[in-house]
Image 1: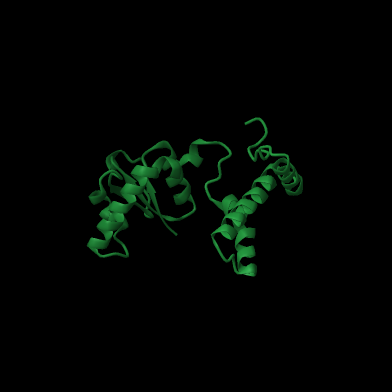
Image 2: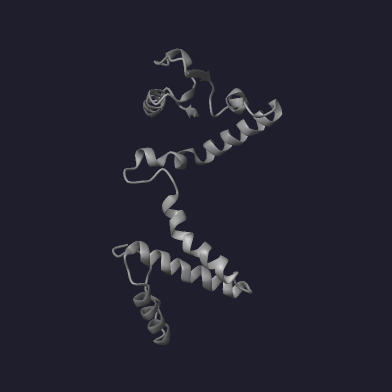
Length: 172
């Protein structure tokens, strides 16, 4: 597998590069300081580039694209990393945070299945109702709460003219 590692000269980048090379992957290490890069390997290509300068990323993303497309791809990548870079790599510095969105996908899987079976709703009000009930179901499931008990409490509160119970985790 071909892997590109941005910030390859940093502590995490070096660790990822070493692991990828140990598993015999072809690695392109992107760094602002290629002369200081500590590894050499036949499967390793070290490239000087800075994610803050789109034009320097052209060679990194060029492979399947023309020069104009590569520049556009590099520019888009630099913009995304500039705007959301911290979010993309938060899983590295936050213990317990998964690097994928599998949990989010699992949480909405039943929504997708329900929409396929029922063919959706007929209007805006039906869409809002489905969004709300699916949110209640997913939230209660994640918190280990009974959906029925929550809905029962919400309906009772509505009949009593009170505020619906909170979906926030207890203690928030």
